[in-house]
Amino acid sequence: MTKRAYKVYAIEHGTVIDHIPTPGALQVVRILGLGNEGIMTIGIGFRSKKLPQGKDIVKIENRELSKEETDTIALIAPEATINIIKDGEVFEKRQISLPSSISGVFRCPNPNCATNKLGAETRFELEDSRSIRYRCTYCERVTVVEPHLLAGQLSSV
Ligand SMILES: [Zn+2]
Image (cartoon, rainbow, N blue to C red; front, side, top):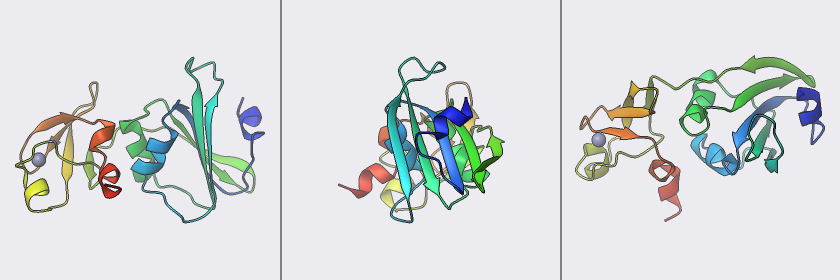
């Protein structure tokens, strides 16, 4: 199964994020804060037995993402699978799980929160993993992580 997926475009070293439900690839790139730091391949809409609506794949060359980084993907694509590639082989198959706390990745929806009023860096603690709810450590508001709250969404405005 993995061999076939890599036929699309094999990489020698780096990180492959597979089984992202279509069309989540660009959000994954955004949540990871990846920009122009090397070769990145984004594939959208592959057929998948696991994901009937199709899957996206993101391949980041020459960069091994940390567990902390890949766990943020669980916020938007908990089904995603991570493969760390070294010398053209799968070096590590990594499961992702929701991070217990997140800093700076998404905004607090409370307009009166210090993070919005004073520009403090956001920080959230996991409140309920089943519904993906996090509690803001500043104003205590509990929120579901939604794509529009990703901090990167604002920078282009
Ligand atoms: Zn807040």
